[in-house]
Image 1 (cartoon, rainbow, N blue to C red):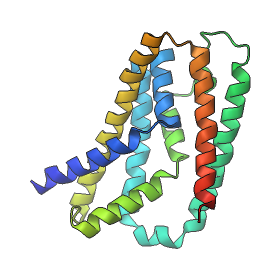
Image 2 (cartoon, one colour; image 1 turned 180 degrees about the horizontal axis):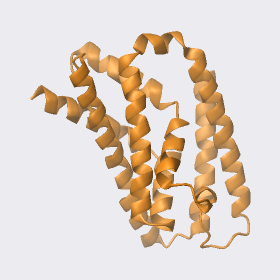
Image 3 (cartoon, helix red, strand yellow; image 1 turned 90 degrees about the horizontal axis):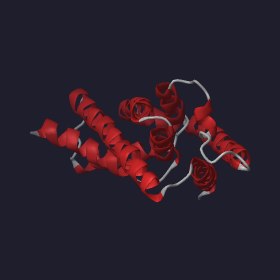
Image 4 (cartoon, helix red, strand yellow; image 1 turned 90 degrees about the vertical axis):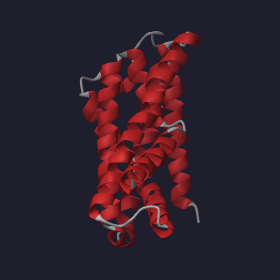
Length: 208
């Protein structure tokens, strides 16, 4: 019974963490709309894989994370620069583009699974998220320390991540189709989301 509860705990937390609108979820919707559901699933699997890896590293080395904040600060600045650059490039690219042209990042033949891995790896914000929540659950006694329990929690989180992205894949596709939104509008929205994400990350860096 404890094992099922641990999996469910990881699932619910990760699912709720994926629901807020962001670059990762929006890209899942773009792939579903502009390509197909199969590629969107591949992308989501790449996202979930890296998130599970980050979570397992957090569970295995909380003390190491606390003593190496510089590493994550560097990743934060890389993420800010990358997201800001992508946002600006996408917005410039959408000016005068054909209404049905694909998103900037989807014009390349990079495997959608590898695209998911890349975007998830460049999202260090998930590390403090997991650090805070897993520490909280351990203190409450909801998550029991131990190799098997940690693995089950990580498994649940991976399924939860997929669940959250599936909402954006199918729900987002339905909404875009229902509203008859053009690819150009969707691409422009993606550029804005990248810039907002960069600003939010910058705020987190300087927040006291």
